[in-house]
Image (cartoon, rainbow, N blue to C red; front, side, top):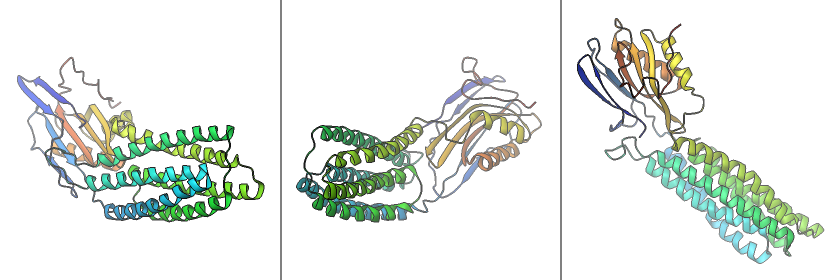
Length: 354
């Protein structure tokens, strides 16, 4: 996925380094391959792959299934109630429930596919499906929110009579269903996929509550504009959450640097804290999922340093200081050996000990 091919000639010999990481990973284990000590001017690679167990995978799957059942059943109730009562708030809430059902199906599918082990075709596994599902769900939230805002504006200029009592009963049932679904999902594992599903249900919960308030106002005052006004307010709240999920998932899909990790800081920290390291370059950081940062880097070590000792120290520092348990480290002696047109520090940030 993320990586680069580096080939260079050094000391009269041609060395090729492939960082495409096409490995089969045994999930549930951390394993490091440390090359035997090399002579001066040779280069070692350490591929340290950290994989945590999906401790909450089965729990999340059950939670998503139960939430899907609750949402799908009461969606049909709200569709019928919205049509009978002529309520935009109910129809909007039913629309939310429809998209929620689809989003929960997508989240459930991504969760199940993501549990499949790595293979020759997907050397990192399929956990990115969860990020992709979060991205799609975020886009759906944005589109639905915009549609409700447009429809609310239209209804303000052309108000329709709403049957308050029917609206109140149906919205109350929808609120109970959404509260139950929200409680089921709330304590699941915190990741983008589950967060997007919770946001969908939370949007429904707010929409149902708004519909109940609007029904009460209509019953006691007869003021019809309250229906589209509250629908618009809920849509704005959902729009904010949808944008956040979409932005975060897109950042991961675009191989962005994980939040909380600064490339310059990583480079300077490794040089300052790991004895024997004189330079760090070709440093790249990205995420497989929102909870699994990845890293590749080249480290130049001093001539009298032990390669295996330095490799172990770098891996330990990256894990403890930056939470990166999957890092690929290339060891170099005698300075950077990249081709001139490639540039040693073009794709990373180097820092030297002062």
